Image (cartoon, rainbow, N blue to C red):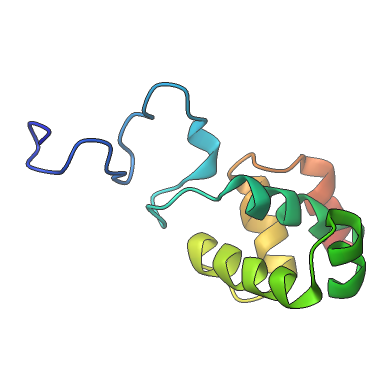
Length: 104
């Protein structure tokens, strides 16, 4: 148990990153980091690929892509692809150029 009373390794908003993790995977709005596969799906969003095309690119089913999108939206506290792109850009999980694509 950590001195704060939380179990070791639990993620708290604005807490330092555990060794070997990247702090850009979380924010004060969500406590669970995105998984590697969720990050792969997130990075496909600015390309405007369909769910089917993202699945084909990542060799997963469209339903699996939908599940990852639902998880991404929940973890980022957003409700759409555009909002996810903007929020991820704010958190430096995507390049600023990605957010510019949404504005166009």
